Picture 1: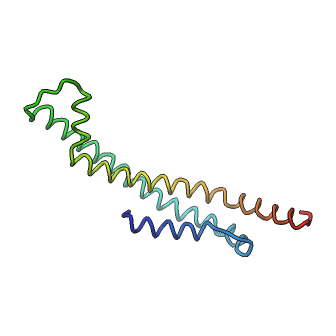
Picture 2: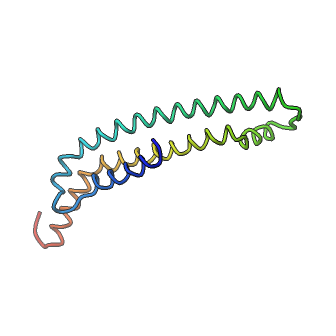
Picture 3: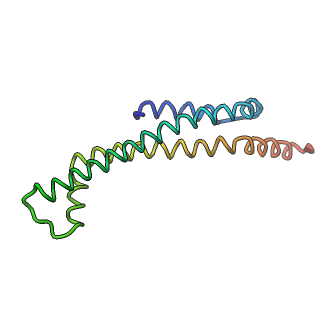
Length: 137
């Protein structure tokens, strides 16, 4: 998912998981649908994250082989070699993609947790409204 699609998705999520006194009952009803919808998206984004992890490991291995066997410099330690790989532009590019995808996956995971607790939050909201209005519940 690119940055633009992610920004749009965040706006949709904010709209769908927000509730107020007027739409609380509807949100309770819709919460299971929202959960399934975002679970599907989360699953797809997790698969994308795993693919990017494999790509990152592949590039790391290629760069390791290149710097260890096809490079004239003799590395004093594995730490030097690792630092060189981490500064290689090919590795940086794939690591950035991986990190962006990780942010998306983490956001969706938190969204699923919020949706899971939405009915509880709405119930608490209603009870507080009743309490502060002076009515018994």
